[in-house]
Amino acid sequence: MIQRLLTHIAWPIRVLWVFVALAPNGFGVVAWILWALVAIATWIHHPISLTTARCLGPIVIVGVISNAATNPWDAISVAVSACGIISLMLMFTAEYGSAHVQAGAYGNERRFLLRIPAPVVLPTFITWTLFAVFIFVLESAEQNRNYSLGIPMLLVICAALWKFAPQMHRLSKRWLVRVPAGWVVHDDLMLAENLLIRSHNLSAMEFALAGSEALDLSGMTRGVPIQLTLREMTDVRLSTLGARLLKTMDALHVQAFLVATTRTPLN
Image (cartoon, rainbow, N blue to C red; front, side, top):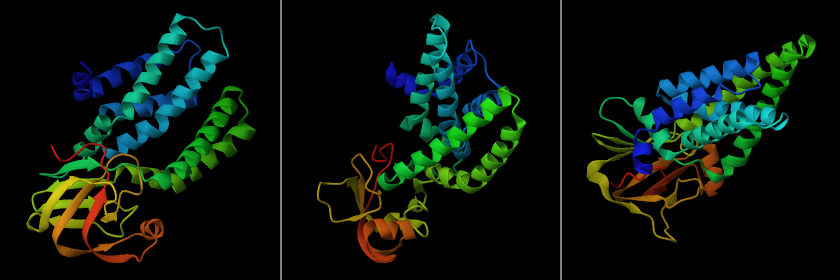
């Protein structure tokens, strides 16, 4: 039953998200806009939609739970909060992420979303938290008709989106891609340019063993990485972040490397 749910994961999320709108304490204008953006994102599968759902969905649910906590709890409040929490849990599953990134694929591609590098998790969370605080301040100002605070806060949010939205979206654009010619690592966090491995040059693709000496392009993330071993050495150009994390030069000549996907490409 769980596997069937994950196979058709979009519909449970869409239905649960509709129930979130039934919050008994109601939404303000800002909350309704965020709810609508996430609702649209659940219907249009694309990497941009994945970023939208995963960044804005938690803000809506935090607001729903906060409103419920400051008012007497009843069956509807509990049900709406539960629907919101379950929908968020499903949005952050590997299956849901894969559905969105694959929907944006070109031609005969098979995309496997990469896990977030561990050193990026805390800065990402801090950025999201600050953005969420700005949203809650704007929502409060709108409900209280405090335009002297609301208008400057709206400008701050627009500036924050201009600055940080592309950085947040980069996390949804990191893939290991199966293409007719072989495999491509598309990851501008760790790499300065895409890494193409042609089929004839790939000798093995398997789960990495502990203590592997292959170049670690996983970003020290959790889970067991995939090791790609090559027949011939190939050039790898690291990004500034990648070179700093690996404490090495930005251009290397390697015969094996590691990546960490949210779903295994070995099936």
